[in-house]
Length: 165
Image 1 (cartoon, one colour):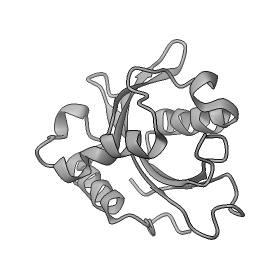
Image 2: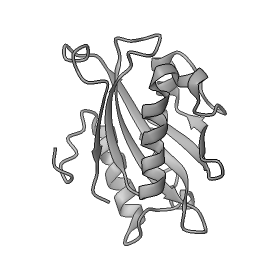
Image 3: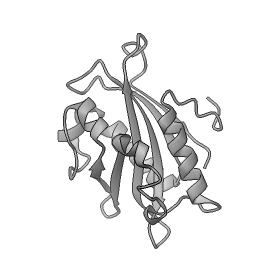
Image 4: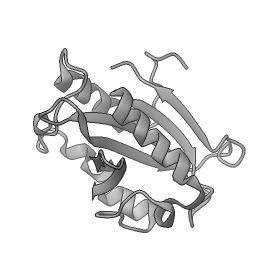
């Protein structure tokens, strides 16, 4: 997939990506303060805000949208990204968030949830960096959409595409 061709299955992710690009302007990424809940209200159910801790590097789910909670059957709000939460997918999840944080760039991800209690699900996600006052990524805006299709079982566990910032 070309970097400029997002190819999202869920149009909400495409629209949220366009919103993020508009808010960032000429910067590498927008700040959390640039995002207005009133402007992204249709996307709130699929949004997951993730705090970034620098030393040691770690990630904590600050907010998890209602659609994500319903699809996964759990609410990870307040939970750290760790093996208890993600099991055998921890390394993929952690490395994906690390890449967004260190590279200050958005990513699209297509993942089979074979590690989860609902292994028939696949997830498409958009992971967007948000900058703190110091210019470093202090939060990740993640949006996720869940689906099943006949390719889910045979798809590689995790496909990742960097997106144009």
